[in-house]
Amino acid sequence: MALLSKKDANLIKDPLADNNPITIQVLGICSALAITAELKASVVMAISVLFVLGVGNVVISLIRNMIPSKIRIIVQLVVVASLVIIVDQVLKAFAYELSKTLSVFVGLIITNCIIMGRFEAFALGNGPWRSFLDGIGNALGYGVILVIVGFFRELLGSGTLFGIKVLGDPVTKTGLYSIGYENNGFMIIPPAALIVVGIIIWVQRSRNRALIEEA
Image 1 (spheres, one colour):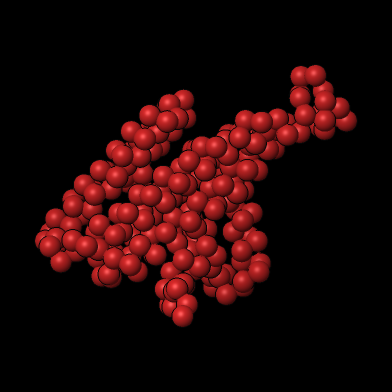
Image 2 (tube, rainbow, N blue to C red):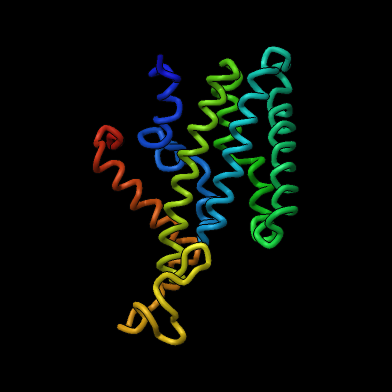
C-alpha cells in the first residue's frame, strides 16, 4: 500500500510546481529579494521555514478546536514566534556568523505570508498529518525557489557557490577569468532577484499555459 494517497501526495507536489507559493501565489517575495545573494543563506532560510511551517501547521491543527476565533491570529503568531526563536537560537549556537547575516530576516519569518496563510487556510480546518504534509509541501516550494535564485545570483554575481570559487580567481585571473569573464555585480543587488524570479515565472507559464491569467 502506498505511503501517501494521491490526495495527500498532491499536498507536497502541487506547491513544488503549479501552485508554488512564490511564483504562483506571489507570497514570501521579500525574503527572495533580501537573502538570496548567497546560496548558503538561501539554503538555511529554506530549512528554517521548512521547520517552522511543518511543525507550526501540526501545532495549529492539534489545538484548532481550542482556539477562540477572535484571537486565532494572536495564537498563530505566538506559535510561529516560538518556533522562530528556536531556529534563531540554533543558528546562534551552530552557525553564529550566518546567524548575524540572517538575524533580521529570520525574525521576519514570523510575518511570512506563506506561514500565516497556511495556518489560516489549511491547518485550522484539517488534521495534523495532512497539515504536516501541507506545511512541508509549501515550505519545499518556497525553498526550491530561494535555492534556484541564490544559486544563479551567487554564481553570476560573485563567481562562487557556498563561498567556494568555482569559476576561478578574479584577482589572479584563473579559470574563466583568464579568458576575459567578469562577475556581474548587478546580480548581487536585490533587483536581480526579481529578474530571476520573473524568468522562473516565465518558464513555468511557458510549460503550463493554464497558469497564464486571462487579460
